[in-house]
Image (cartoon, rainbow, N blue to C red; front, side, top):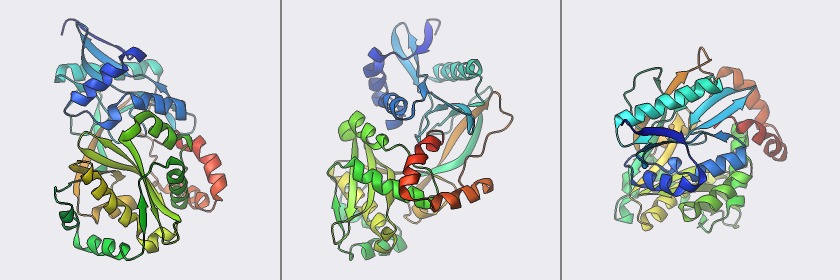
Length: 346
């Protein structure tokens, strides 16, 4: 490794970066270079994507973004708005050198901390401390579509059967705007600032067929639930989902995720990744009802300026009154103000 060099990614090397991610066994959808364009164009954050080369051969990658806010702090993250991140490399030595370069960059930028969102546990030395506050949920999709229902817990199967009696219809013709409208209303109801309306269209434009929306309509053909999902390697990842108040009684979210399993299975996917949730949150408890495998996420953090990490979780008691006030905002107001806050909460 005497000839190993680490430098910032340039535009002409995006294809080589993505080919490396595609080939690497731990390469995820969130490591793809398209996120560089999406996050920079939608949220305005500065990227610091690092690549490692050995005699002009690409041997490692580490996507990084700098988030800087007077309210929420200054951080270098791999990768914000994404479930997975961290370094991909040919071996441990290269990974550790990429991580050391990330920490050194964080010191140069004078950030509060550097965060690596590793998908799997990683043994590391130096300033890195592991924290496990989130978990993902995953399940295999059987070859026989009739067997999909049997993979789900009994009580959740009953909910799905209930939803199938409500004359719901589905449409996976891409419609990012309708999907975003449903998502925006849902997160407002939860008391959370919504992302910019440009996000869904940017994701679709950047990732093409790897990004797809699914809209659920009631018997009057009115949209009630929607989800934007990613397809990568053998996996489907429902990522941004939500619904109107009527979705609760109609069980249209349950109908939606069950239908997505069938659509993904027909596309040849063999795995369903339900995304991450904060442990003991409402989303965590909902996903747990499905009976999927719970996979803790072992993120790592290195403090630079900060003495302790900020707690940006909605479960933080100091956000209680903010959440209650946000839930009462008119939808148009929440959609106008949300992007100014949510860009730092990824």
